[in-house]
Image (cartoon, rainbow, N blue to C red; front, side, top):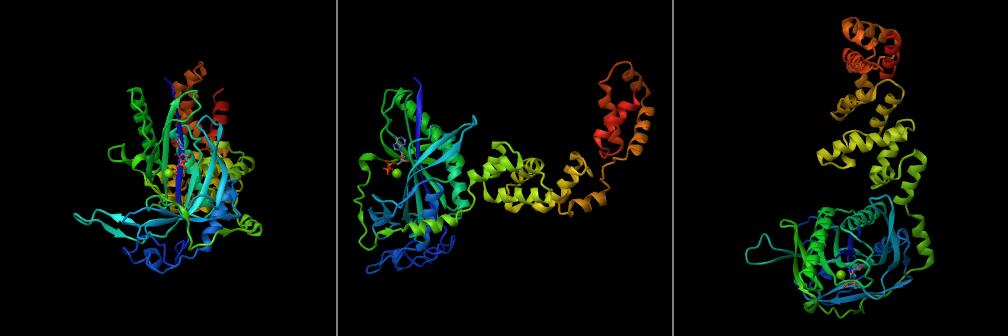
Length: 477
Ligand code: ADP
Ligand code: MG
């Protein structure tokens, strides 16, 4: 039996406001437990929530960037359940009328094609507090600092067909919220996390299979692993004669498996109803137009422009626009390199990326500035240094030895382009290797490489390779 995988993601993006969604308490991460929860966040009697206007603009930005409808009227609802980290006994969320709905996002697939993923809705809600199990033997600590932190929950249609596609979609949403400057995207701190809904169906069948929902995954790698584990598990269940039950599961990264948390039967009935403490959110068309004007150039558009302006492939432009910081770094490099787009792309994605990857660093922590890198690339394109010597210069720049020009000067790395000088060195090489000269003249033309190598060795790689080849051929006839 051939199976088709069906996945829908619910992504929680923490909105980057300084204060909470319904109170003035700080949202800063990492404070002492329970120092940033005010009476509203604690759900004390008699308090009234007041909507933070900042989140409305942020949700609208997201809606516009994903071709969605930004609802002229949306409503906050109470989602009722009991848990120690939720002192009010309900979470304020949106249910029937979310602020954003019916949009889409295109993702790039490995075969070079694109796939459109529907965005069902994106709604505003408050986060709950955190239960702390580690420091309290036989007890659970409760930290309510996170209670009331604003979230945008982004729900996709069940349009994803593999774990890889799910990761591509999640990465694209991640890039987008960071471009829009509405979420810091910090996955370690939980600012960006997702629930993955996974089901399988026989290939060709239209009806969806029963899904399991894997909760709270906070890394791209884990999303891929958790989904793949879940697919295998469901196939095993069905092929073993069983049926998949609708349930919530947890991904255990240490064991690389998903485990059942609760089944549909035990699932809560949340008894949603409109929150009587909060007015509906009414958005005027003028507000939406004002928000539209604040949108930056978005990843897809930027990618398109990079292919046109710099002659890059779609894949290269896609990689360079995967984050705003990287795209900016690249464009500043191009500028400093006198417009050399292709060369800059090669170096940013090649040497520089490799170096950053190895050090586990982000582009913002690059040991060379775009101006330095571009300055070095100028010296490649004007023939001062070869591409090979450039690697040496690059390394020195990364070690803080200054900019390219001073390193080239100090270490005497200038390429030898003077044909008289090159001729002289070639003469010496030929005189020192009479046997090879004879063999070459006898028809062994492969030996040209040997001579080039000797000349390069004699000049410590500084001779212009093109010149060397040309002059060698002339002198060997
Ligand atoms: P709930 O609020 O109960 O989690 P929803 O129906 O709103 O459920 O769906 C949540 C997510 O599950 C959405 O992203 C949706 O695309 C996805 N989904 C729904 N049905 C399936 C299915 N059969 N297989 C995989 N994903 C599904
Ligand atoms: Mg759900």
